[in-house]
Structure formats: C-alpha cells, structure tokens
Image (cartoon, rainbow, N blue to C red; front, side, top):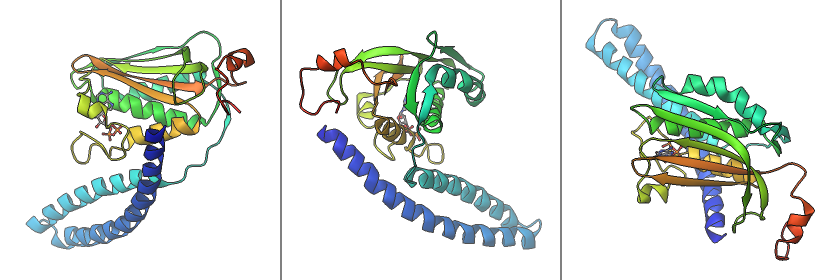
Length: 254
Ligand code: ADP
C-alpha cells in the first residue's frame, strides 16, 4: 500500500512538472519551427534548406513527445457509464488490428454474454491500446497478441477481495528482464529508443485502472512473452455474501 501511495504521489508531482515543461517547450518549438521554415523557403535548393528540413523533422518528433506529455499531465475527468467490456473489446478489434503490424496475429476471445462495469470507456480503450502497442513492439519478428475477457477471483492486498471482470492482454514477444519488470509502471521509464517511447503508457494505464478501483498485474518471462491482467469491479458491486466473508477488515468495502 505504501508503494502504491508513493507511486500515485510521484505520478501527481511528475504530471504537474511535465505539464509545465511541455507547455513552455512547445512555445520554443514553435519558434524553432518558424525559423527553420524560413530558412527552408528562402534557401531554395541550398544545403541549408536541406538541413532545415531535418530540423523540422526533429521538431515534429519533439512536438509529438510534448503532446503525449501534455495528455499525460492533463487532469483527465472520468466519465463513468455502464460499459460492457465484451462489447468494448469486440469493437476495438478493428482499430487494434490496424495498429499492429502484419506479422503479428491478433486473437480476441470474449466470454459469452455481457461483462458489465461502471467505467470510462475512452480511458479503458486507451489502456488496451497502450498494452497492444507495447505487445507489438515486443514482437518485432511477429507473434501472437491475444486479448481475452472473463471474470476472476482476486484476493490480494490492493483491492477488496472478490470476483472481478478480467481482461488479459498477452504476447509471445521478448519478455522482460527482472530489472525492467520492476520499473515498467514508473513514469518515463522506457527501454525504447528516443522518439519511439515516452515511458508514459504503462504509468498512465496504471493510474487509469487505479481510478477505476481496479488492479493491473503483469507477468513476464524473458524469451517467452508477457501478459497483463486488468481487474475491474463488476457493476452492481460484489455479492454481499462474499463481502461478509472478507474477514471483517475494518472499513473494507464501505
Ligand atoms: P513506452 O512504451 O513508451 O516505452 P510504457 O510505459 O508503455 O512506455 O512501457 C515501459 C517499458 O516497459 C517499455 O519501454 C518496455 O521496455 C516495457 N514493456 C512494456 N510492455 C512490454 C511487453 N509487452 N513486452 C516487453 N516489454 C514491455
């Protein structure tokens, strides 16, 4: 629990800091891009004009990074509604298929019927997209990305014990070293090259799932792959019988 608190305070502080820097940095980028465009236009076919194109290219990459920083730092309001996770995953299938490369096979398995949660649809989609992009990046030579839904019992220290909706996202890609596994939810932690990763995908996903009173778990093995499990409270709450069994922890569930 202490670790969780540390994590969310860190996210909060870094979010504020990142937002401020990203904003000012964006203004500077606009100036750089403006002058580079002038050099490009006035220089016509010159060597300087060719270099200006390179500058504009890098500026665009930097702008992309500041955009994701701003998105990360923005205090996102949560728009809660009843969401059928099975429907959400099925509807996301097409967009995800477009996102991953041709060598990666996408397998989607949803449990029968409805899987209802009270959630922010857009934010959950963002989490699944983040996980899918990471899975794709972990399978440069191809592989299988599998997304499945169901329910599962969860009894650990972070959230009240009970039955939860479960979304599993797994890949058979590179997997991660222990040192990497320990740091993946840290803001700005990335092993990707500059311009490819911001290290914000998993930390913001963690924040989103936490805001939903859920939990996110990762299991990874070097050389065989990684799977993420997202637990979300089923709508209607946990059955009261199960809650009564939860060893009468003070304050639990109320
Ligand atoms: P980014 O994708 O920008 O690097 P993330 O927070 O999404 O930021 O991920 C952090 C790091 O976690 C990645 O750089 C990568 O090293 C590791 N990672 C995340 N998902 C996977 C995965 N499915 N397989 C292997 N490594 C992963």
